[in-house]
Structures are given as C-alpha cells and as structure tokens.
Length: 212
Length: 212
Image 1 (cartoon, helix red, strand yellow):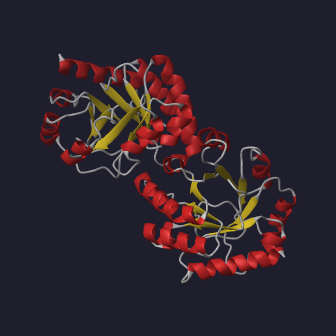
Image 2 (image 1 turned 180 degrees about the vertical axis):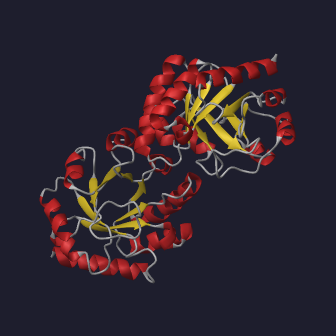
Image 3 (image 1 turned 90 degrees about the vertical axis):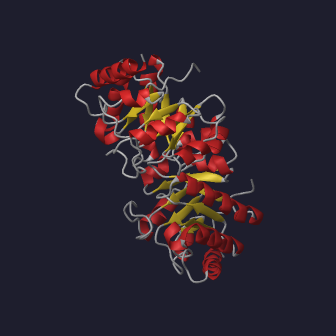
C-alpha cells in the first residue's frame, strides 16, 4: 500500500448523510474532490446493513484509490477486504485487530489524552485519531474536549501519524495543521453539506495552505 | 468436532446473570450440570468487554467440552477461537460467516417462520434457532410469538438441527421436544435463578423424559 495520506479524513454519519445511499454518494463526491480517507461509522446499525454499506462504499472508492476504513467491526472489514479498521479505547485492542487483519492493513486508534497516546502500540498502529479537539454533536459518548492549546501540546510528543477529530468545521483546520497534525477528520463539515464536493475542496485548500 | 448436542442451550444475558463475573459463574455451573451449549449474547456491550467475557467463558467451558457460541460478533469468535457464531436475520449472512470462520466451526441461524427456515443455507448452517415460541422479556426486538401449534407444524418440515427459543421456563420443554425439536434454548430459566445448576438439571430431566 502506498503511504497513507491523512490530509482530509471523512467519517461518514448515516443520519447526516441521509442513510446508506446518501453515505455512498457523499463518500464518492468527497473522494473525487480529494478526501484522502473514508471511514464507515454506523454504531446503531445491524451488521447486514453495515455489510451492504461497506460493499457499496468499497466499490465507489476503490477506483479512486481512496482507502475505506471500517469503524469498530473487524468482521465487516474482513468480509469486504476493506483497507483497514479504526478502533476506540473500548473496542477490540489493536493487538487483536492486527493479528486477525494481517500486517498489510491499516489500523487506526482513537485517543483523547497523553496517556492513551503513549499506550498506542507503535509498531501495530498506522495512525491515531486525537480528539475531540472541539465540542462535537455527532458522537454522544465522546471524551472531554481537548481544545487547541492542549492539542498542540499533544502534537509536540507525536510518535505516530495523527489526525485531529471533533467539531472541526470549515475554517478551523489551519491551526491544527500548524500544530503538526497530519490531517483532519470531519463528519458534518462534509456529510449533509449542500455541496459535499465543494466543502471537501475548501477544506483541502485550507489544509494545503496551512502547510505551505 | 463431535456431534453437536443441542439438548439444553444456555443463552447468557448480562443483566440477568449479574454482569461478566455472573455470566462466567452461571455458565460454568450450568455446563457442569449438563448444559450442552453456551451462547454469549450481550448486544449492548462494547467489544473490549465482549472479548474479555469470551476469553473467560472459553476458559471455563473448554475443560468441560461445552462449545461457546458467540452471538453476532464474528470478530470476537475469531479472536478467541470460539466454537462458533450465532447470527440473526439482520446480522451477517451465513455465507459470509462460513467463509471467514472456516468449515469446522458451528454456525447457528435465528429463524421465526417457515420462509426463514426454508431460506437457511443447508450445507453451511449447523443448526437453526426457532422462536420466539412463547413471549419473552429478554429480547425486546423479538419477532411475533409462534406458539406451540405453529411451532409443531414448523418441526414437521425440519431440515436442520433445531433448537426452540423464547420464553421457555421450567416445565415447558416437554411438548417442544415431543414436537421434534432437538433441544431448547433458555435464558432466564437458568440466568438469575437462585441455583443455576439445579435449574439446569431439572430442565435436562424434563428434556430426557420427553424423549424416552
């Protein structure tokens, strides 16, 4: 697999995207506009529907070379041969996921503080999500908000590729990139926007601008 | 694997059993008293906890030769090398589970009517659960109650080993066995009973009596 590009990481939300069909359409448009990773996250869904969404998303994203990451459900990732799995602190441990997924797939781990970052298994984890940086409405069980100052501090000790997540909207990516993060993950900044492709392009512009 | 004995199939419930420790203790006592299969079912749990329960249950049941079946989460079954997976109609399709689990593991499928029974993939499915036979309080999203008369009718066309499930309490197993089912699955008839071992033994007596 080519080097993982975390620049703009889209996390799909079934409700904001308008269900399965809306998720596939949004993911496709965002990927065409430059989103570099897409994650399927639908914690309320039963697995039959989850599988169907994963199949359709993979078919839409594979031709564009954009990796599809499955949140939590390793079995769905195995079933559709997804690019990887993203786990949280209460999901399957990275060690278990790596053992079952093999050495070539991507594994991401959600972290929300310095001790969780320090505990991420270095040689088994491809990237960490760090958040919530800002208050978010799309994850009811989110950890306490980190804020930009503490986030910047966390980035100083960065040991793994990292993506910032949590409440990141248009116009908010630049200071995170400036703090040293490799990319930003968004949900509502793309899902449910009137023009997901335009929203994606604007975010990417902002990210690239902050890097140059 | 030796022939699957479905006689008394215990489905664990985290709340009725008193959490993880209670589930392991109940499963161990029931298996010692003759329960022939144990299923871990905890749909509300995150996977880290699910995995821990599966590890502890397997350690308790393996020495007794009682198979541990994991409800829904194929990835947990793979992680702990469980004896099998049980799926419902909205979970992963049997075909997908069989492909990832291999030919030697057990796969059970929940069914609640004749068309679902007819659709069960014969050569990939080890057994079907048929229910709810009676009203049940442990599965809020259960299908309509089948009742004994319709259940007996379903057993006349039985093509796969079958276990009856749904509201089965002490004293209610005999007519189901007489109708031709291979075993009964219980939750609250063992989980949360003052003496799970005695409850198990009494149910087994009833099942064996109905067979002779």
